[in-house]
Amino acid sequence: MTTRSSIQTAALALAVSGLFATHATLAGPFAHGQTPEAFASQRIERMTERLDLTAEQQREIRAILDAQQAESARQRAETRARVDAVLTPEQLARTHEQREAREERHLDRLAKQLALSTEQIARVRTIMQAKGDDPEMARNEVREQIKDVLTAEQRSTYEASGADSERRGPGKPCRPGPAF
Image 1 (tube, rainbow, N blue to C red):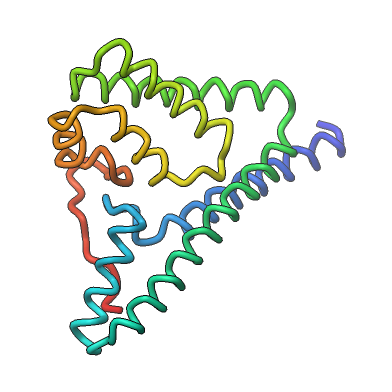
Image 2: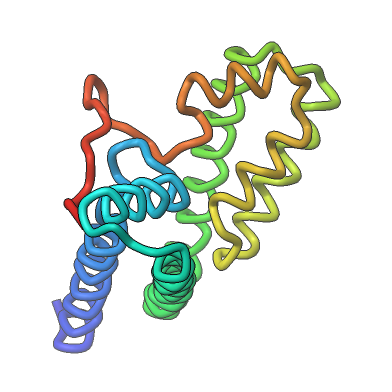
């Protein structure tokens, strides 16, 4: 292995490990089935109960949490762009193929779970592709767009199943976040 090749391999390893570390840090308390909005609401509710927050304090804290969520989305997009810049064209093509395959598996699960029509499948696919093209698009925005495609009954099933929340591991229940 040449020195240049070793440096490229080390840079790639560092970038990928940084991506995983950033993801773990940014995923934070949402990793257990809560959307960022649900987490923020739950957090504000706990703080209100424990600290007797005023309505104004609740609004200010909501604004702080919303700004943090937006900053996290920006950081994820920036990290993704930096990692992509390190990858070769072949590696980039593979990551895009893997992302598309993941989206198709997700779409297949949704289609089966919700008995989506052919037209609904096409519309949801378009939404998912738009998310892939725009990494700064918020997950909750994607979920809301998907909900708009569904019938009332499908939407109820979608929400009840947790499909509209962050991914949960097998058998892992939602855990409450920090006390504040």
